[in-house]
Image (cartoon, rainbow, N blue to C red):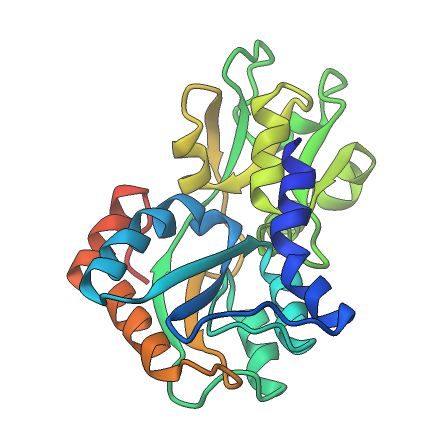
Length: 256
């Protein structure tokens, strides 16, 4: 299974249940967490730690871009916790009354970086270098649904490059898909979070840190329709605890 199919399967399986009218038979002790794709590795490490501290609880993860995750929640998918890679998506969730009042917390921050394949010989050092004729394909997240794509759009717009580079863009449906494109050498450059670049440091190089966008802070909240609000609150508390924060820091996330 390729990465794109894997993301689509993981990202939309719950939504498929909703549309088919057959919600998954979750047990009372199951806690479903929908989280931004960039949190995959850190949250997978947090899972056994949280379960050990909360015997009987089974954490079920749904990783994808924040936009599609919000659509799933809006469609009625049985989600208890939502962790987004941007404020805008959770702002939308709040406006639609999908978030439990008083539970929204910022828990980490990140950095937007431009990456190139580890064996690149193009000498790309700045975003302006992407205008060169030897750069034919640039991977970015879809700005309509992927937070890293919006940060990328804003950053390149600030530098006056976004419109001129558009013909070279290869859009990914999550930050991990963008990372995969660069890792496989299918594009000459791409834009991901520093944390994603770190987990693929043997396959990609960070060419530059980007600016000109809103601060990249991640909010987490309990979903208003959750049937496990108490346990969901405990998950938030664990993520914000010194133990949870230590795991996140290990993967390169910073304090919000």
